[in-house]
Image (cartoon, rainbow, N blue to C red; front, side):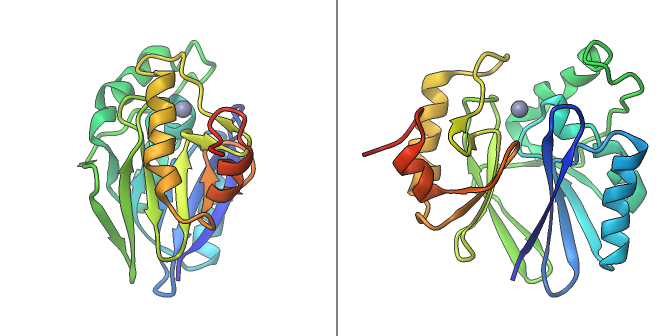
Length: 214
Ligand SMILES: [Zn+2]
């Protein structure tokens, strides 16, 4: 059984997730830790729980989701996996990190590009990769349908959706991703978003002002 632990990091209030199971193996999704205190919070948690990190995964590569990639990668000696379609988005981060106030941002080398529908394993658990562009060109969600878990990044939020005005963003594409990919999941699926509180597919289907289906 996968346990999801969340942190809220950096001035963008980005949600970072650590997923682990009974084997203690874990994956770190979208590490947004940047300050000394934030780095301490996540490493203390992993150490205190005796977790064994396997990899860093990104749902997409906007700066607030990748600030801690390099730190986590080095701290635990694990590989960085990013979605295949996010390579250019990721490689542009160093060009604007200073402007966003993250002087000292350290870029990390990518070890693996995650493909659409790729199954990712850790411990006794697996995550499926759902391609859901619109907020970002190569954005993916990591899903375990049996356990009704969806790490949605910035595709879908509680009562909202990801912004579509950044490079690679497109409103119609995002709505289509939500309707055809995320809303195909069980209504009870818990959505762990890139920002804000958790929600469920059923709740967003019924009430989300941007993409509800009635
Ligand atoms: Zn984003």
